[in-house]
Image (cartoon, rainbow, N blue to C red; front, top):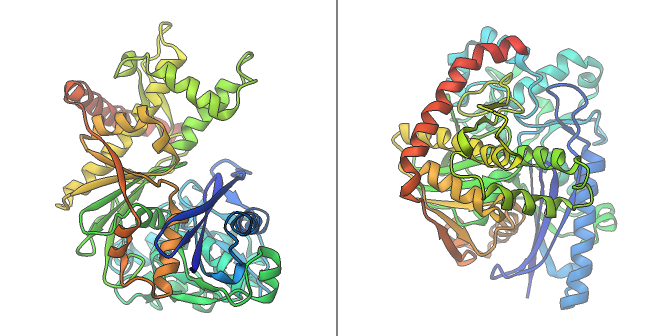
Length: 507
């Protein structure tokens, strides 16, 4: 037998998966890490101490377990697939050394000035024509411009601006690449129609020779070097594919590979990917490519989800008497308590904009709101309201997708939040969508393993992922709460509209 390894770097955790040629999951492993927020509105990772540390830890742990449990030798692992949070920007010098911490995706909102400047200088409409995306806190182009303007000494020493998966590929192979799906988030640098860096607009951000080589996600980028083999436990010469963003790998991992398939990712944020027969025209969501040529997606993502529930749990654990609980025990306890609060959380309504918001409102200075608090409300009401607030933000995004006349044929859920049945049921009830739950919900690492197998030629196309995926159950929307949640959704939308100016003034 031959094997493939997939590793994913997330916002708070990294995961790895080893499979055989049939998709049988043999070994999986995870490791937590910190999200660094050194200033208000900033979100960073240390590329070396977080990304590469996690990769080497997972790779060595998995190869060791594979040898102990199955007698698998490193040379029998034929390829590696990687993914990471995206878009993230890390500048590296000529030797490939990071010059600063990586600036993360839309949870990092420092680039409001650069977004406005590029829109004024290049024209927002022209940027949209070339990139098929409107500039926002999510866009990587303004993050590069921020480095150029605010840290010119870093910019001058930068040989290449790499993404998260690209940094791992570079550490493994010495190559400097980026996959086209991730590159599409580098507006206004990427021309989505020509599938190349934009000579017309890109020079306003940086010299194009500072950008990596473009590949499709499943293409072989290089081979594991002797030095990387010593650090990771992999065999020298192991193939390494270009990889991609975590969300796309998540979608692939659950078999969301046909037109009309919607992936709902429950992670530190929520993310949505709908496979589309054409390049969508939207400025509230993100039009994008896919892992392979000829496929398109419409995507969106909130700024918080699991990060918000974790914030609440951290407050819970700080209360005397709760501090002896583990995080998992606290989640279980909070969820059990929240189940005692009725749908609607006894009149409490949450705007989950605790780190600004990405789609569909693109409001970097949006603020979180717990509205309607009284002396009768409990922690259980608050936690239920937070879950419902996140669910309402998902409903808002799905409504935007439907407004594009793009039908959703089926929804498939994935990510750590899938373990929370109350949250899943809340989303189904509020969005009136049935969610399929696969047997394996490990996520992006599993999708990366399939992309590696595809890159090796073991499979013909993405549709073959269906051989790996089995659905274990479905979460069906309940009709008895439909009227309640329709009214709550109306109030949710009105509450944001009526507090938006106050949010900006408070910021």
